[in-house]
Length: 254
Image (cartoon, rainbow, N blue to C red; front, side, top):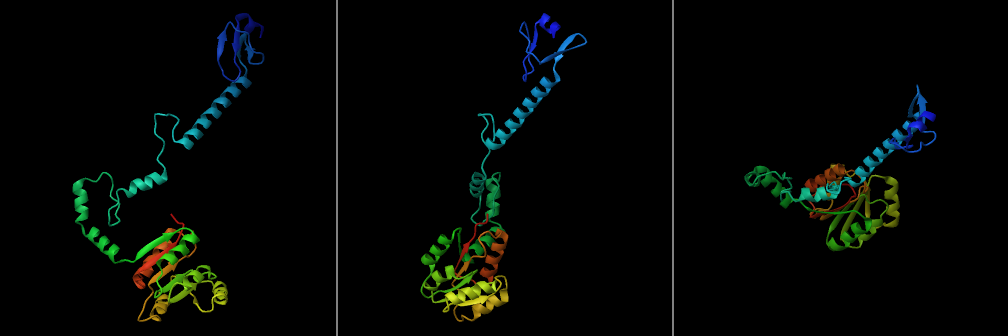
């Protein structure tokens, strides 16, 4: 320490910088073999501070997308979704942005494009809602007095009560017997069946009971958080088997 003072060597704690001609800071240097060196605790402190700063920088970059104002932030998933839809063909096929005009023209002339357009024009209309209020409002707006309606996922009859006053015939199905029993007590004039929504033969049997009419509208609520592939599979099954005019689906899946 005395030798360090003699040559005027000092160390700034936590920064690791040295200067000549300054008063040493006590505890930051030590003498080894006659030479002034950094105290190990000061080195450890400086390295720890640098590591914390590095990790903080990574966290900020992850949160904002960039630390450099000249670098644009990362594109959000919502923005990417809109950008993707800008390149979607009317037939539902996603066309890459790098497609040339000739490639787009070939797609429009392809059998795939024609088949998709035919299916879209012959399929029923689909309305998707997220909330119960929207689901029931759709019923108020869409149902006609002469409609026959299938409600898939009738639960205890909350939405059924809304539907029943707007159409000629309503059948509610649910796979849980206890829920169907409660619904029957609340709405004794409505037909409820314990039925798996994917049991096609039994669903078709319900449709045949309406002959010569059919299910004009189908309302589907099989738990709003059900994965989208399951919901789409059920919709496709009903579209092919029942051929309704409109399907209204409550789903929060993405």
